Length: 287
Image (cartoon, rainbow, N blue to C red; front, side):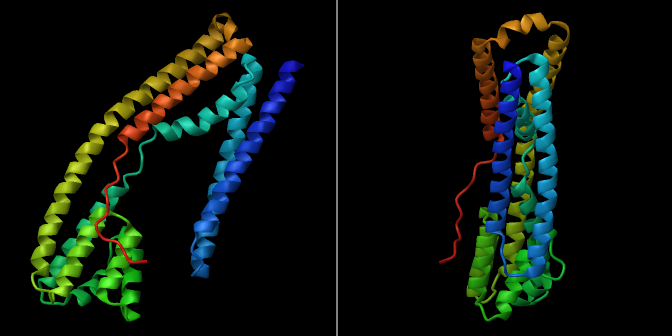
């Protein structure tokens, strides 16, 4: 009876916490969503609904796993630990999205296209408008906004600085600052500058890919070790449950939580070590 009460209490606690997390994520996403376009707003709301649905299914499944493990092992702490592990460990072990590499690839393509257009004798403003017709997917929206601002009588410097703020990347700052300087000089040497900048971007892109390949090696090792550990522990629980009998006591539960927290803490530290460091930007708007 005591075990059932503990499990039910744990389920209620987990459901409440997961519900609060889901509500907070939805509220934060809605608060950050621009409301300038009804079509954009509708699209974002539909995406949020899909994400919420997947998240709700994952949370429900994780809660069920926690309850089943708590009843089977008679460890009440599993009601909280199992859902947290199901939802958190895959995210900690997954490779982070390489936004810097993706943006560098898009900038490389855009800069090379701009350089080839400028070499034909067109002005920077004309080259910008032509580049917005067939842009890299990652730069499509910023380039469309850039052209709209130019059409609304923004100066090229203001429009390019606003685009830099939207991209929020030091690499994009270098490209857009070069364009601003070239515009202030009347376009003199813009094609040669962008060609040299494209070569620099290509070199940095190759270096980042090599660095990420090296960072992925310890992540793969940790993934393998974690999977092997979980398989061994699951087999031990199936065939040697008496060995884990001391963990069913209150002190054993505390020790179990400490061990799990220590392991999760090591995974968090490893993930932070594999994340690229954020560099300071060199171009910022006045607003």
